[in-house]
Length: 194
Image 1: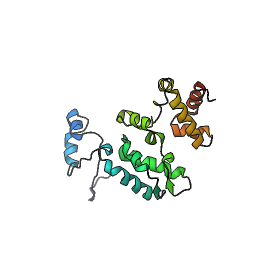
Image 2: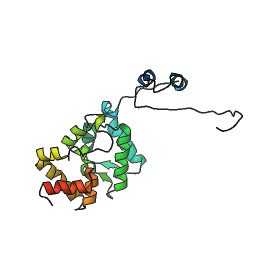
Image 3: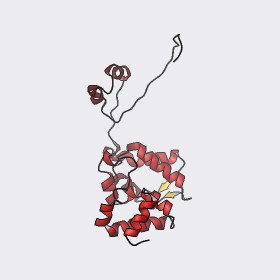
Image 4: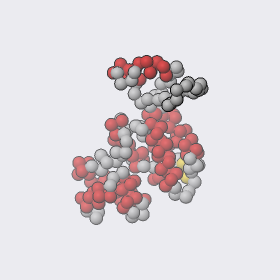
């Protein structure tokens, strides 16, 4: 780059896409000549939700790689396999990173350490409906005004259990529930918890 003479280089390009590359070429959003230049070998990999047998080994691998706790409670594999992982492997890595950084000082990961969207069946079902819930939306829909009005006892239980785990720390509970502190206070006021 920026020179007038060529220099020989020996490189291998590895690229990945969440999209079907052929569709991108047909749509004109990826140049065909570029695609054929880089497309030496192609590996199609199904999303993690279609490879349930890979979920627990990947989770354990990243725990080991990131120097996390070496053991899991007995029910954690079932919780991990039930969740549909719309964020694929990146989501596994981010959850493991959060567990390691948060750290409880114990050598065992407990179900309560996992994000609510994974350990709660309703949240897991809602969250796992597909990529439209991807990103950091997490429980915002579950804690939406409409859901809160329809299921006040459920939301009360979620908030109280989160506050208990976070030892009454509102900021930590809001982070765990992936909502703002203002939303947490609003929900608590609506449910006569404040």
